[in-house]
Image (cartoon, rainbow, N blue to C red; front, side):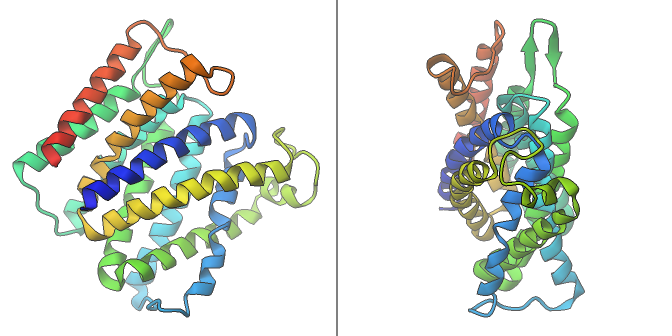
Length: 301
């Protein structure tokens, strides 16, 4: 069941990833602003803590909540920063390949997860497929773009957040764990007010100094995107809570397989809305990667 839920989550998150790239390019060009919008909006969840949530006890459990919330927030910032230097159809899969890799390593240390040989092969294929998609082929460039460092960093931070979340879900249940980890994402958003760039949002009602749309339009675009993202994240986190955190993260290859197909369709049929350039052989490379991901998915289910 959790595999089906995870696949549904990643289908939604593929759409969110394209929306993120559009917002970074067209509306909110500074990653710290998009991170602020994405995190501070979760702060009101603190008002749910008196209603059915269990209070974390002990320094370790509080630390796990903070690592989950802050780690996810920093991962968002790193991924938005990477989108400035790379295409979403390449950076996204790189994050998708590095996240389950780091989850596998961290999970082996901190979580008692055991896998069959078939599952290990499937996880490897899903990671490999994402890694193949992330390679760029341009006229004067082949390999990973400058955003690779940000992509790997985002993958590590997402992995740390997921491992901490899995621990909290196991101790306090899905509802309590979700509320507390998301509350600390909201706290992270409040801390971003220390940035002059973020504070500048409240000193101008016209266009922000980053050069994007008006604050009102930014909030509307980000709000729509984050509603979609909320659905995807809720499904993903629930799958993590009831299933294997390593398997769920390996399934992110499904997201990037769908992402590639969506980017190709948009680039060919709606280029004014969204467009990425493809070199000769690049489409074949990505189709091959999707086939590798499909094989991994078949072995897993």
